[in-house]
Length: 388
Image (cartoon, rainbow, N blue to C red; front, side, top):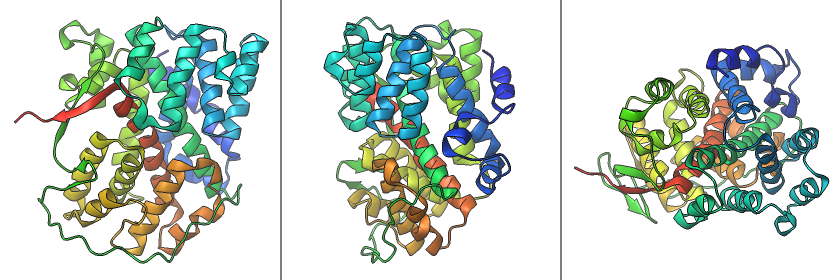
């Protein structure tokens, strides 16, 4: 499957996210979503790539079983119903389907699949616990490095999908959801100044590197396709363990990078500093020290201050120097922790703080993409002190 054919397919019919979020063609939320069409196309492209029967490595049945299991654990009723139908249509045996759908890990007979689902549970429920030992259990169960990359990307993508569907359903008014408080007093002003080093609760705004726990693709042995994807993904991708590890599955990385770049860097909508604030909140909630560091730095570069970052590191649930920042932080926490409880009422505090629906959509995208990003960073390697 090529990127161009994926994009053509993605725009030729109502895509999966539109269908699961209940967005009829031409509805207000559908129109709003497709104003960020690069995100929509890359999201659909990611889905089609992840479940392409021709994708080498994990079988389609294995991938669908992981998808169903992750959707039940999250939980996301819409995604679970979709992947249950697909797993049954793929011809999986009834016993496996029942065990996965019932999240009865002990009833899964196949040891390889059971190892994958064990890893899935960690990444879905508590990604910070997906340590090196958890990752190395996969090669021990017979998975190759490219298969590990596929599995990690798949689980992380499902985490993104669930939060995107929940956020879009809320925007369309399809679910009432839980109202979030709008009258929490701002915390005491942080005493940090731009340029100050911040170290609070294990988080920092210092520059960190990241090292993969399994073998990366050496640039001098990369295929032309892998080189092309690295060059598309990030200016420093050829010297980054993160990209050199994920490029074991280049088409998955291509779609993921397209989604990330469109979400975080597109002009208009939510201010980029606010997207970075939301990303830092999500990273702290998930326990991703590396992502929190990177996006704390970007917030400071864009906002020319770091007071809100010190507050996020101290307590992301109450962070924010203004009512608007507080509303963004609280919504970021809620969508991260309980996507199944998000509905139209959950957006009231954001609107009261002055955010319009286009800004809220950008916030939903940023929160969802860091459900994806954090799970890769936390579970495939570790942060290390940057070399001078």
